[in-house]
Image 1 (cartoon, rainbow, N blue to C red):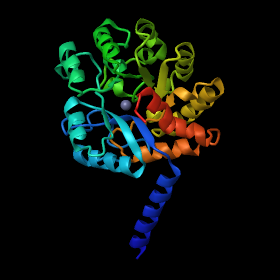
Image 2: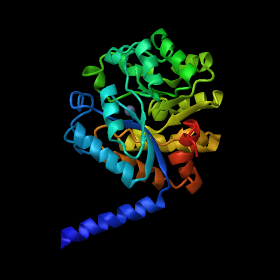
Image 3: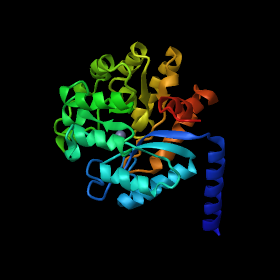
Image 4: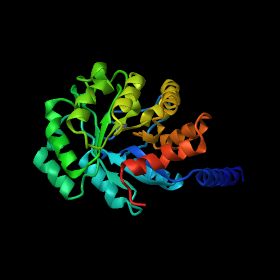
Amino acid sequence: MIKKFLILSTLLQLFLFAKSQTKIIDMHIHSYSNNDFGGREPATDHYGIKGSANAEAHQKATFAAFRNFNIVKAVVSGNPASVENWATKDSNHVVIRGILMFAQNDYGIDTVIFEKMIRDKKLEVFGEIAPYYGGTTLSDSIWQPYLRICEKYDIPVAVHTGGGDPGGTYSWSPKARLKLADPYLIEDVLVQYPKLRIYMMHAGGEDWPEHALRLMAYYPQLYTDLAVLLWVEPNTQRYVKGFLQNAKEAGYLDRVMFGSDQMKWPYAIQKSIRFLNSLPFLTRQDKEDIFYNNAAKFLKLKK
Ligand SMILES: [Zn+2]
């Protein structure tokens, strides 16, 4: 009986929650295959919650979150096989195909393969590109041929800004250095490719939120997502709250986009939505813009 009641109340909550929320575009979702599942992230998150058991369970739980929270589009990045696997299972046409890259030759990719992927519609967003983890920045010469192709085909670029997992430099990303995560280091890219559609991931992180905002001030084409800051630790939530308050007062909120960056923890999608909805200084319209309208504009989605 108690079990039945619990199920009913959960369903009711989901229904009410979904009702109160408009459509969502998630600009920051990660996919995996079994061979890279769990290689980067720790076994449990900051709150002690375990990630999905394997890549398949993770894909299913993430798709369930898409349905439950009215997520109509999601930029999915991972290894190319995992993105393709998700796209083939995506009967609701939610997945926008991205790619996760730390170095310019990850997965044996070169510019010829890259351009073919774009022409074959296997790549719709160039990102998450995270040069920080590979010891470079997006302004480095190794990334320029890719950026030229993105500009040519009007492919949006999604670049990691801010640091990564504390301690990662001692394990899976030995080349990562905090100084490489400064948003100012993508300024040359903005100058070189003024027509390029580009958004920062993580809004400069806890490390450089003010730099992210100033860069948005100088370059009106630059957008950002919020990503992992919305949920991963109380401290990142503190920073993102400040970032959003400042962005609102400065008048840049119309270029801020929701992204959950759920990694191995699909529950984080709901947690991120809840946190954003809980911020009292954002109006209902602000929230609708962050959850959907700003990303729809950035992605040039047809109405
Ligand atoms: Zn990410």
